[in-house]
Amino acid sequence: MGGNFTLTENFSNYSTTVSGLTIPPTQSSTQNTSVQTLADTQFFGTVAPSCPGSNDHESFNQSFSVTVGSTTYPLSTVNLIQRGEYSGTFHVDVTVQTP
Amino acid sequence: MRTFLTLGFCTLSLIGANNAVAQATAKQTAKAVDILAEDVLKTSKHPGGIELISGCDVPVARALPLESENLDIALTSMAERERHLTWTKTGTAYTVTIQLMKDQGITSVRLPALQMSANTLPEATDKLLQAAAVRERIVSMKLTELTENLGFTSINEGQEHNIGLPAGTLREDLNALATAFGTAIWKLDQRQCGNNRTVRISWIAR
Image (tube, rainbow over all chains, first blue to last red; front, side):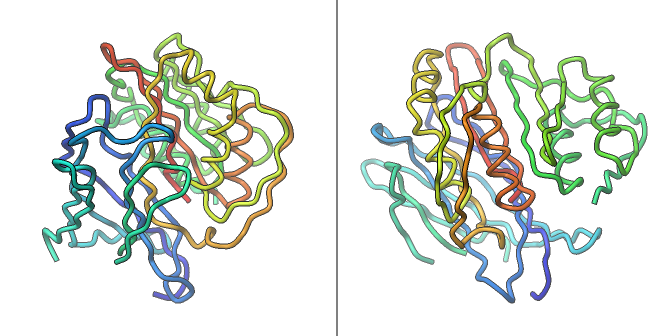
């Protein structure tokens, strides 16, 4: 997509095994996919030197909207993201719920 | 999709995948005060940040901000309605503070002058958060630090930024980063809910 646009991520259906963790805030970023790849970095962790505890993980739905000029277009894609330590195994899974 | 380990964190990561502040006047809103402040600041396309220091819950805003193309006017109208909200402007950067608890925000920590180079906002922020004074404040306030969801890398990131930060507060440094990377917006979410005392700094616009 040429030209600058704003991509907004929204999160919902949050759950976690970690006390105190909360749903990530809505985030927006300026993009121009004719110039650079759209790269989403998903992350679960703690600040060094501590590490995630046993079975610490979270899951949530990720949905998107794109704003070009003053018009916002909701995207149909919904991802389920599950990330963290699951019974001793670290992984991040992104499952497309709605294409 | 590619997976990588981010330095500086013990973490698991995955790479995949101008002033118009148009708001309705004095209508009731179901949005929390901090979310409404986010909307106003994001729409303005100014760099800056939002500090939320709260208990378990954040109250719903009494009303939408006054319709104005001027961010100063919009924020002033919010501050008049929401007694916990204050705002300041330094250069082009705006800081909105929502103080629902008496706790001091960690953004008031004073840091020495620092020269840094960073490609992304999380990388630059990590360098600030590793400062001894920040670590000491987090420990002394018995805060658990929640790491941010890194999110999408914006067009303003990915190339090296050399940033000189004079001695000042963490708040001033974050605003300097927000300005250096375009019109980014950070958010401090510092809460005490029951026995949980948490703090998270996120980049909500970049």
